[in-house]
Amino acid sequence: MRIIVATSLALTFSTVMSARETPTWSRDVAPIIYRACVSCHHTGGIAPFPLTTFEEVMSMAQAVNEAVVTRTMPPYPADLTYRRYAHERALSNDEITAITEWVAMGTPAGDLTQAPPPPRFDDGPALKSPDLVVTMPRYTSKAANNDVYRCFTMPTNESVDRYIDAIEIVPGNSSIVHHVLVFIDTASTTAALDAQDQEPGYVGFGGVGSTTAELAAVWAPGATPTVFPSGFGIRLPKRARVIFQMHYPAGTQGETDATSIRLRYATHPAVRPVMISAVLNHENIVNKPFRIPANQVKTFRQQYTVPADVSVLAVAPHMHLLGKSAKVWVRTPASDTIPIISIPHWDFHWQIAYVFPTMLRITKGSVLESQFTYDNTSLNEHNPSTPPADVQRGESTTDEMMLTFFYYALYRPGDENIRLDVALTPTSASSDTDAGSSWSAMPNPTTGTAWIRGVRVQGQQASIRVVDAMGRIVFTDTRDALQDASVTIPVPGLTSGAYNVIVTDGPSMQTIPLRVLK
Image (cartoon, rainbow, N blue to C red; front, side):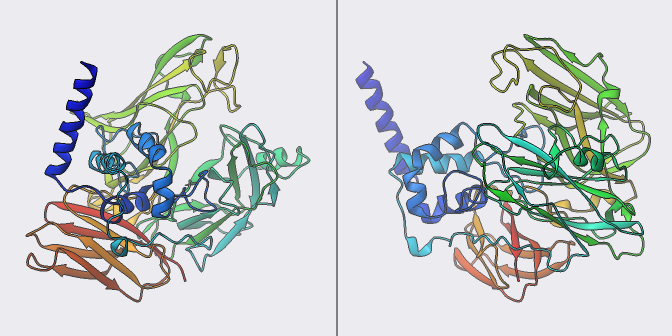
């Protein structure tokens, strides 16, 4: 009976595959891998092996298949059935199906002459003319068997207040930097902590050791510069310090790093300040005390009443190693519920600032609510204590936190129409792709001329727009329904910076981040 069932399943699968075109590397799989995987999986990247060629992906086909089926890769913890975001890295169901069918059918190459070229990776910065560059002291990683979290604090020496409208974090050694959190602080607390440590920097896990430090930027592999919409910026107070919280993964011992941050100052005559604040924090936990007893799974709730109308750009929850799940939502004065974010399976190693497609208005009197669950049992493989120990609030590895950072500005009429998927480059670049067409920009990054290449929806008009980081359209093209199904469109003369290619092709819409290096 088992043989008959297995044979029936094989025949059924074969019949289904014969009813539609078999996925190939050149046409179907390469665009997915190049969009969502190679920012980490390239030579010199943070991942353990490259996936930049057909041969490399074919040799790792089973591992790739397992990673996408279990959704462990690419890392994008947010539940997209709860809410959608700009520049999502996650794979769609159709993309996962394409990869699994490609592997099941023996990884066919297709016409390799029609495959998109692999992305090129340039360690040089995208912001070529920053107003300020701050570089941490050179540090040699001590991460042998355990991850290392270390903070580095540097003065800016600015004599007046500034507003930052573009931020780029440039790892000094991208092969060992897992992620970076950058904070701004006017206190001298971090300088004192640095002075107490004989090596450059000081140990820092959950935070940077100062209660007045404010989050300013986040970097993870694949990130592009954060560029705020015209007229918005983060305040850099005079004589402030910049603090890098660096994560070096186990196995990087002996490697050196000197990460930098590049800042561009706003020139707009009236900059609206963007605040990045843990509005939901330990002070507004409903079911205090915030204590997680050993051998227990415990859930905490938070509530905070919004005192004014605000426009939210992005959200970033934060927990440590006991984190199990997180959910945040808004309850309006009219008792409507607005979903903000849900992370069903928390992973401390992949903390992302999730950018909304457009500014999200939250009205005065609305209540921000959250529910975070912690697993302090031996079943939690990330538990830092063996056996489990009682845990409370704190910044060390064995402590916990319950924070949700919001990127926001005070509301003005019309804010809800400001597109952040084209105006704000987030920390995780990717594309939103509906089924039906497949488009790519190549080479990416480019040095000035890119080609927009697509397999089109049949019988539909396609429009292509290239938008710069400030939301300005710098290139347009339209292809009518009668033109070829496969097109390549040159886009010459681009200057340095971050762009988005927006393709509307019949029922399908796709956003492709494009980086120009000169």
